[in-house]
Length: 174
Image (cartoon, rainbow, N blue to C red; front, top):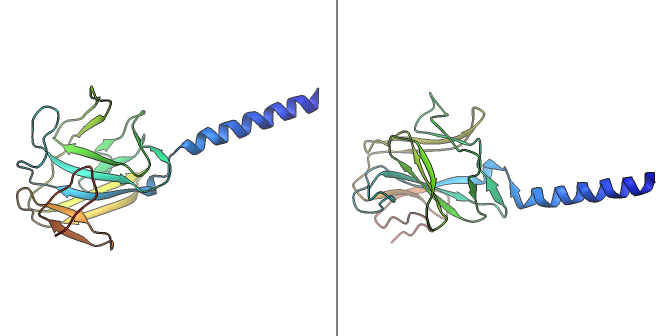
């Protein structure tokens, strides 16, 4: 009987480990990849508004549960927005977060999640910060932006202004 219980407990432990691999919380694998602080006609949210936006990418091979991850436009208050439970960024996928000066997380009719955070970005330049429990995981500082020109991460790890913004897709430079 003890052997049977040990076998069942081992199987249960293995199954819980396998399901835990499908969705991780490795926030260090989420990167800021593009920022637009002066959005005119590049991208509208589901309400038809052209809010500033931040693009995130999951660079891992697993889906990431983003609950508890914080986003801000400065270091003084790292938790201006905290991702709620249920928000998952699929492996290798992008997520566009709208900076609308109000907080709203909703699932649209096509199944995608649209997120509005309670701060805007300054076209004169500032920073975007991802953090977890007061530890900064990623930070991007940008200078003055021109309307509909993003600040984007290049393949070599440097940042540059991009005349052809690509919200939700790989960055392209001409």
